[in-house]
Image (tube, rainbow, N blue to C red):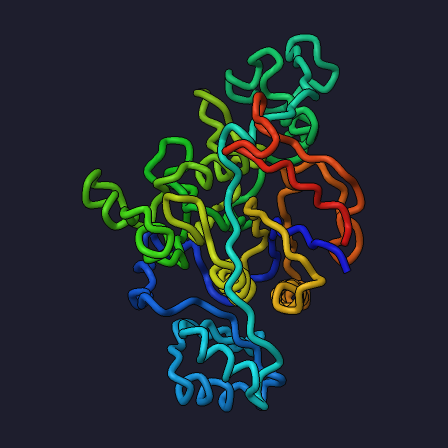
Length: 362
């Protein structure tokens, strides 16, 4: 088996409930217990739905703590010492136990590297003749090639999007106070682990701390990546700055990470399931990482993603994911088919910025 690229997705359905009536900041930060010194976080997967309750009881008997439940995929998020993890792996109710894998957004300097396909746009001489005039920054010479690549002007001849279409952004949050996003964010659901940046990664600061310092909303965006993605999708068409490619759609913020730009797989899986169950039309995600499917634990997580994607698909959702920044080709089953990586300009092999990993096959 090979390495499976994680750059998870997007979802589409008819709403069983109306999100538009819910104001942003409706969800409180998750009440995740403090991390104990001898604990780690795991995904425990039951053999079948009938084993789910038995596995939960086994976790408690073995001295672990269930911090999150994902019954749709027969899984529990557990914090426990290594000894407890070993006992759980032997449970007759368990299909497997895997350490909760972490994924990240790309650092800005890495995300910006390797871009060469630029294209100048001359609106005055365009044969397309847009019905809707884009915001003035669209004509910045050579910079906004991506809108042309997805044929935004041609699409505007048909629609600029509809508020009846809901696009969820699973990311570091959305700054719903920003002029380009205000009024477009109809709901915020906060899945971010408040202990991850501050305690688990030892960075000493949480979004709650930043909110207290700045006066901003704790379920907003203290990283910026999510708001950048949301702006690309639905930044307002208001005659100022730049607009998104579908400026009239409604946005839902699925906050899976705090300011440090790191999330556990369990947060992402939970966000996908929530979106599927609440009728989101499209879910976009631009977090990424790799799972080595030759490792049974990582393969277990891969299969959980496959289960969640199938769960969403059966509800009619569209899943849209980032292609990744690594300049590699990913084939069926997540196998990396090509050599080569994009690296930060000026970085050296073995240096602090990169280790030039070759992700080809296994």
